[in-house]
Image 1 (cartoon, rainbow, N blue to C red):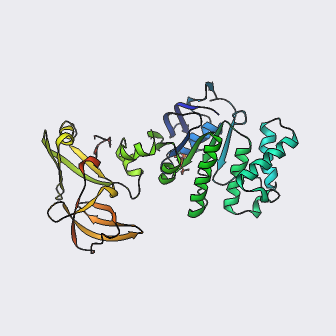
Image 2: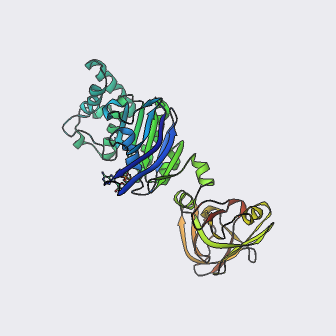
Image 3: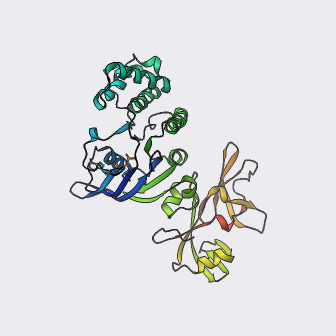
Amino acid sequence: MATVTLDNLRKEFDNGRIVAVDDVSFEVADGEFVTVVGPSGCGKSTTLRMMAGLESPTSGTIRFDDEDVTDVHARKRDVAMVFQNYALYPHKTVRQNMAFGLRMSTDLSKDERHARVAETAEMMGIEDLLDDKPSELSGGQKQRVALGRAIVREPDVFLFDEPLSNLDAKLRTTMRTEIQRLQNELGITSIYVTHDQEEAMTMGDRLAILKDGVLQQVGEPKDVYENPTNEFVGGFVGSPSMNFVDVEATGDGGSVTLSNDDGFSYALTGDVARRVSAVDARALRLGIRPEDVRVADAGEGIEATVDVVEPVGSDNYLHLDVAADFIARVDSDVEPTVGDTVEVTFDQSVVHLFDATDGDALL
Ligand code: ATP
């Protein structure tokens, strides 16, 4: 096992015309599971490929424990990578696929290799598939074999590049749990790339969020969810996404009102108001998570027109027009009629406030 440290990692393509990874630094502790997440093109695969040694950084360093591996060849790094497209050898059996990596990376005898493959196959529940070729397997089975092939090598570091993207939703959920269980059991330092924020939030001990090659935030899921460092992170994690309303702050001291020309008005009091009145920026963006919006009694909230009522099992998503499009996640017994006006409110302890110019969190 190893601690993986990235220091000011940068990767340019096309003679610097594309900056895929821009000055990224973070550390993954020994045995930790860190997910790297962000929208398409944000540089997550390139970051992972640099850790694997499949891409060399333009600048910056990668260390496994105290060893600088930046210029170490992929084959000499003790990492195992699992890809989205499984990358199995089509003409080899499952057994040969699993044993092949072992032959390349260890000096075990043939018998020892086969014993280790059998043991791993049992752990993965694929012992009955050992003599099959990849073409005879379902997508889920192929991914299990790809995982088995990575595990059998007992590497210092696991690298996963969107390994579940090709599986259907139900299988994806099962495999997520399986990967977490295996990682817990084996305790191998793991870095897992995904574009799916839910996957990143549920699987990672911590998550690292990238946008345009730049690291936005690294933290535990709950902390990132409750304290996003900027508007991008606030909107990226959580589903449905955080609601945003452009506002201006007026008043000072213990009484501040956030309002806009579309008739939106929300009063802050006490300590929160004092903190907002101390903020320099006047163009602000208020962020409220759908689950923090409540339907209030008449006269106690902000007026909103009901556009759509979307039932999702135990909850309803109310699509509202509150001087902006707004989603409220409420109990399924809250079923207003489309077109009606309701009043909504939210506790000031859960509101987020961002600088509308640079997106930085202010509260
Ligand atoms: P996705 O989820 O779509 O795979 P990603 O977050 O993994 O995206 P990368 O694949 O790391 O992003 O790509 C980051 C940026 O670098 C993109 O703009 C991409 O087009 C560019 N890029 C990646 N590899 C190369 C390459 N070999 N040559 C040129 N540009 C590249």
